[in-house]
Image (cartoon, rainbow, N blue to C red; front, side, top):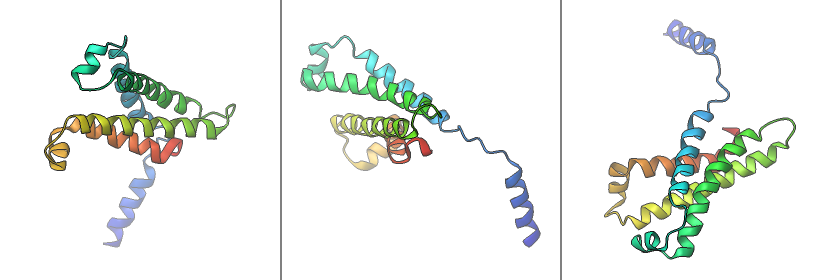
Length: 142
């Protein structure tokens, strides 16, 4: 048993670390939110009313989606030696928090029958919510 564990440890240490793997989650999530924000522009009061929202809420959501997507990418790019690391980390965390808030609102507006319905049948929004939560909690330390 000990030899198997040692072989697995050697195998695991031989695999190189991919320290920029957060981009594999950051880019698709950011592009999804940028696309959703751009789809709401120009702001149309009739579209806001179709979801039962005021124009002000629709405006905040559209700019929030666009800003959080751009902020998620910019926050990752600000992780350089020329720019203070706290700036990119704060931008990433704020963007993740915004993504989580907007996604919570989208799930809430959908009026699911139960929490289990959200988990089982609303996979896209669950992915967006968990991705936003991940970046809100980890920032650029991902």
